[in-house]
Image (cartoon, rainbow, N blue to C red; front, side, top):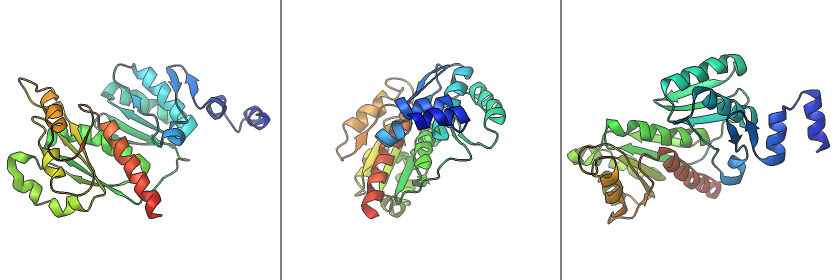
Length: 252
């Protein structure tokens, strides 16, 4: 305790960092950021931007960077990302920002660059599934997982999938995103011996076209796979990362 107080007094530790050390979280303008989740759960807290104002997203991202040296933001719109970029130029000028549609990964200059001895294959049925897959990939990339991305191999033209089968079989875990009737994860799971995580996507139209048909189809899969909620790229990426981390520990 005394060391923390002395560090705050001499400026080598910020009050937010000290609070994170003591409580595991830091209280900021936009709420409490769980700075200890990485150590406790193996996956850092993600900042869900939908429904938040741009200043709230910025405040949470700055708390994350100050206490964990990185921030992962999902479902951000252009205004929120623009505000974040503007703020970072002043508060964290050495930080790097990577963006995939509405998913943003920011690392400070001091951020650890982990590396796991595991490969996650991320597969999409079509272009519309890309943003959800991007969200999952950002989680895996932040953890240092090797990613093999295979896009546009939906079951409407099965040859596209079969052409990539040898490649898919080399992955340690597969994350498969598909909308419409959600058939692709079931087909993939019947062709590989690695764990498959199905991600239903809210693409389609008409009856159950908001991802319900894809979710129901994956839940009723006759081949063995795990399923996350509709559009839950972050959750799928986190699950794949936990599997990859367990494999990395076993291999080392």
